[in-house]
Length: 136
Length: 138
Image (cartoon, rainbow over all chains, first blue to last red):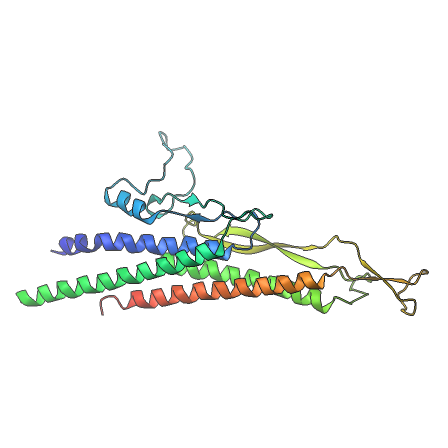
């Protein structure tokens, strides 16, 4: 029974974790808006979630390790999200590629999507509660 | 917990931006200080930002905070002003004034305060999201 409840909510849980991680990445972009040579990063939410749900990881390539002693590559992003660099919109002399308007818009959108997921989870839990009460 | 990392990231940006605001304030305050602590005219100072990995457990890719890596002194030539009555004037009557560019510093100040505001708003959003997350199951 519990595992069924878990699978019921696992998609939303993964989606929420990914949204929270994207929030973190976008916050980093905003925080580094004045850092020389900083390159803005982001990942595609829909593709990553699709890959995770299909059991393929997030889409980022992993280094193949055939021995225990092989070093690992970059520490992976949560769910192996494929972090990409944003293409430059308007070049800056200091090499920074953060466009504040884009970042702020994406940040607001992502926050709204996260709240949507919270609402969905609450509704789903309410449904499950109703179902449980009906059987007792 | 990703959302609490947002606090660390934006918090580091707030610290960095207020350090920048501090240097701007001291540059503007000393725009006419002919004699500094070392006996020479005050030199304009600028902070240098650096991106640093943030968050617990080995820092996930993409979560970068900001740190002030160094404070550099401007190498621009001193402003020369003709003022023979000044005790610090040389034999030609010229006085070396600090190389602070007041216009540049004002622009710097506005930019720093805008970035500060941006990061405060990011923090507020993260806080609202976390509070909302806590209501799940109620």
